[in-house]
Length: 329
Image (cartoon, rainbow, N blue to C red; front, top):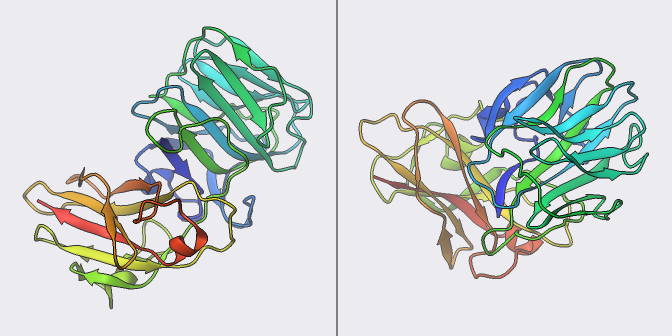
């Protein structure tokens, strides 16, 4: 199942990752940068010779896997692309080779030189499976997998990039995905190269039960990044808001999931929950009820692996669907 995803396009330029995802933690040195991503959107950038990292945590994972696009400049020192609390899990060497370690710091796979050529976007995957470790470039295994026992990564304390800065070139990361082999969907290894597309509300849906602070409900929840938007408010259990969304910018051959993210805060005196809704105007499906924080605004998210009819998503069903939320008290 999907554990953590980010295409970085929903964040403000130079903004804070944690604004758009509860899994993100401390952010040092890395910056959201516009128009530099694999598909022309935003990416997470670590400047040349800069020290930095983006911490994240996965509450639970059984045989986790990690995948992302990476582009790295010329360097004179290795760069840890992924690390846990014990040290690097995936390191990019000066010659473009990749070293994959386990949670005990033991090298399990070394991908050949030039696996990641300088100044070139490359899709990288590493998976910690039952019985071994696998790695691939562009969806194609390029080194011998490790088969045998190993120490699993500490998924409660991870870092995307973990550079001391000395001798590194500029590094960009885009479309970051973490998953494991649990659940009924998105539970296999490996992936072919993937793209995360950002869709924003652009019209009303078939329900408008929340009170908008702006002109309409959909205009109130739409914003170019997580710190914008006028917002909508609900006070009665069962109130539901639905919105139409912008169409996919490109037509994919397959769609793994639609992940709905909303930024919420409970400013009342009673506990409250939020349930995400996906509907096509005839049939609706809902996610699990999630507690809304009373401390500060936070992002809640739900992956919808199938359309409301239970079929695999297609570009037409994504473009024709509406999404929103229902309040629970």
